[in-house]
Image 1: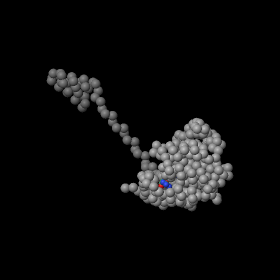
Image 2: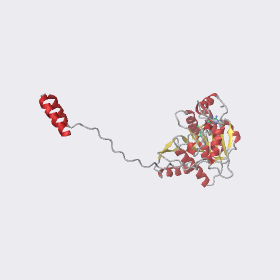
Image 3: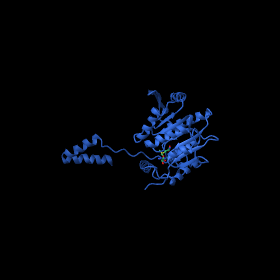
Image 4: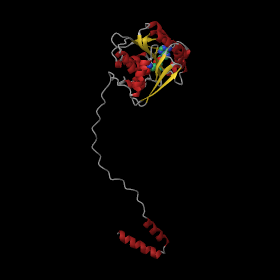
Length: 309
Ligand SMILES: C[S@@+](CC[C@H](N)C(=O)[O-])C[C@H]1O[C@@H](n2cnc3c(N)ncnc32)[C@H](O)[C@@H]1O
């Protein structure tokens, strides 16, 4: 039997929220969103595909006054085509909008604008050139991702950042094709690659790349490689035991109960007796008793009995 996600207790920390958002990607979201904020780059946020809200909750913390956050997910709705229906039935069979909203409200006072619909509606619902950061993580089928990338291109402000999830997973070839097609023919410029996500922009990636390279070189938990491919500088980052950035606890966080007083120290027990080994001498003596004439054997036994007594 599958358990509905809303049956689960409220999350106490971000790690309690189910999802796919590894520490390196949390570090990169934090770095890139904070960089925009520090530079005064204002704009809205958008996520396509929220599932239980792990990455949305993280992004919501970066919402500044006057900015809007829109999320889009099918939740309980039917998918727009059979292939997408099979994908969601297999991967998110009991997802509900309530489960997402309960998680989100565990960390934030207000919900983002929620579009419960296929991601294709976003192009008509979110203003062109309004967003500074778009996370594409809805359907992983080619036609959908192709459309999501086109929508992101129109919706992003100049220099805005798009993140494409699962661009190279074994089970998501459609995302890989749509992503690299966007790089080769639709003007998308890679900023960096993590294990799961490609970070890109239709602006100039180089200043951000330089900062990410410096960040990786300054940490001992982030591997870095830089390659050239088809005229693009490809910065590849890989976390090595990297911790996730600090994130505030939810409203449901409880201090761990104090540990019960330690029981009085147990009395030291005598060490168990080592298994006794017969000495070589006694073995020799037993053999002698078995082979000696009875009269001598009896004399030996008598003398041993006297010594013991
Ligand atoms: C991989 S999950 C998102 C994970 C989430 N971003 C996280 O970090 O935990 C993909 C989500 O996309 C939704 N989805 C699938 N197809 C969609 C479509 N065509 N339009 C909108 N959402 C879709 C699914 O319901 C699911 O919640």
